[in-house]
Image 1 (cartoon, rainbow, N blue to C red):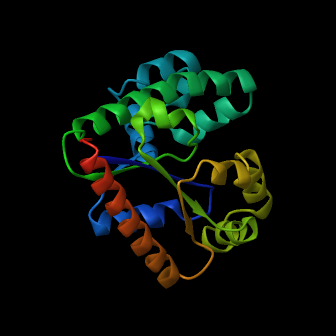
Image 2 (image 1 turned 90 degrees about the horizontal axis):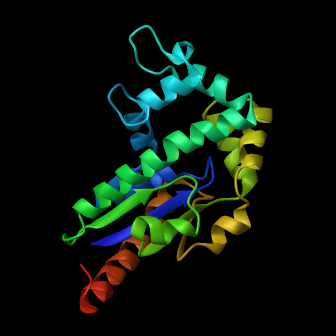
Image 3 (image 1 turned 90 degrees about the vertical axis):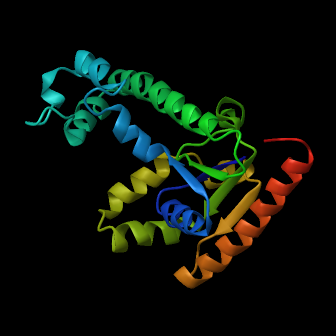
Amino acid sequence: MLAVGLTGGIGAGKSAVADLLVAAGAVLIDADVVAREVVAPGGPAYQPLLDRFGPGILAADGTIDRPALAAAAFSDPAALADLNAITHPAIGIEMIERRNALAATDEVVVLAIPLLTALHRDTVGLDVVVVVDCPVEVALERLVGGRGMDRADAEARIGAQVSRAERLGEADFVVDNSGTREALAAEVDRLWAWLADRRREKGRAGGA
């Protein structure tokens, strides 16, 4: 198995790259999907969140109302720290378990992690890190024009992330997504060939 960390700033197009990699044959473990699963009823973060934030975060059907939870957590730094302390370990454990279940295979396993840091290489066991990149202005246009986000909100979200330079500093491979969808497909073809080479190298070295 080749474990690939995939990240990129908001609006960079990480999800589009993930979809193209899956179409090429990769197996995807998406932190955003896992995040929704761990807070579902019966999930490891559900009851701790209810204990911490109270029944006001619940929707009528008993699931967690994500906007209500966000409103409760993001209004107070201490509450946000509590939210992260509950959800991040649960997400990390689930992603590691899913990665380990594929360890003996020959798959290219893509772990999509929005807030990927240097620590993830060891904690999640990543072989390579791929960063999807575009200029901040392009990301901003996509958020405002494509997603209908308020410009001030989009600028705030971009500003709250790690810097573009810091993210690129962790990259073993950079996917340029500053152009068209066709250009991105060509970039992902180039990435897939590179990943195939890394998988062969790992296999020759005796890795799973």
